[in-house]
Amino acid sequence: MRVTISRKAHFNAAHRLYRKDWSFEQNDAVFGKCNNPNFHGHNYELIASVTGPIDPETGYVMDVKFLSDIIKEEVENQMDHKNLNLDVPEFKELNPTAENIVVVIWNKMRKRIPAALDLEVVLYETPRNFVTYKGE
Image (cartoon, rainbow, N blue to C red):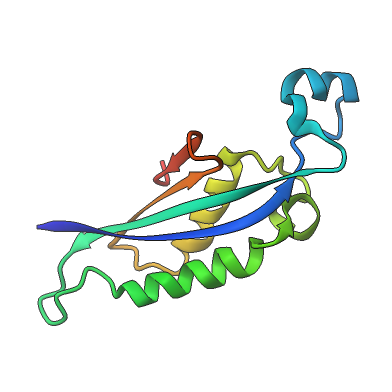
């Protein structure tokens, strides 16, 4: 029997979507107002889910407090109230689209979660726009 536990969190961050090797006009055509040279921000919502067997000794798949600590240390402490393009090393050369952000978050969290457990991260950039990554 496999069960999924989930933890919800949030962080606020600014970013700019653009490619350094493109002209402003090309960036503007592809990324629109997200190409604002002065950046723009989002109130990101995150749901991290871990799936695995229930430990017969504890009754847990994983202690939710441990999952909460991982999110705090790997996501909130590193991204909350930051400019993703300027303050987060992973985005120095990587365009901080929602798709890239969710993969970066998944990779950071995956290192801290036992290999026998599956990880899925859902990242809401807005209440209606969200991405999901399962490491595939």
